[in-house]
Length: 240
Image 1 (cartoon, rainbow, N blue to C red):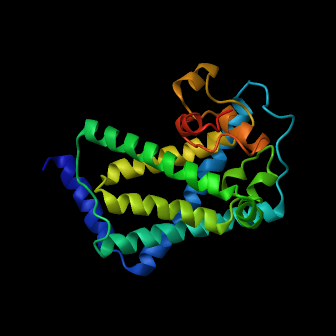
Image 2: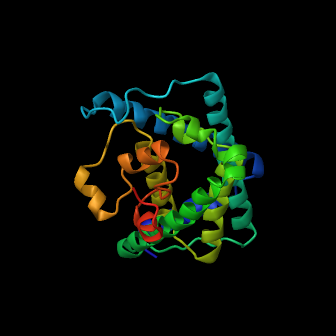
């Protein structure tokens, strides 16, 4: 194993030796950091982007949304702990590949499979009885703000996390691939809930789930259920 592989193995072994109190603390701290990072990215782009807003103004930030967003952070922390439990009990195995090509292919696979899973999960969340109980709160943000990504019912947050854990149980993805995917997921979700188009208009033809693509879903709840791409919406006839 090369030097980088040895360093990576040492880090994995260090985390393996964490006690459960250490894991709880690490999970909370890392998810709070990601929450603040997302808000920072949103505000930076919103203040520096010169493109016109997609909608007249951002959704107002409310106290209830703020507290719900914090609860989403707690739910994400819980999902991480469930993942650790599955890892420690052999249900999830972490691959140790150092190949750049293999890592890139694994990231692409994670994006495409999770996009497909989220398409059906998101579509199901719009069934009338589910929407009223669970998903309607998120769609109060017809326009969006820096908390919109985190204004989710706990069942949505945990459901998304469990889908990913099921995928990780089915294949030994590298910890590097998983980390890159999770970073892309956070940044993409943040960009998707901007009130300004982040991507060039030409990106739509390449099946990219652009900011405008998701913004149109908030305007028309019967269309654009995908997240990273528009592939599944085009395939199943829900693209706008």
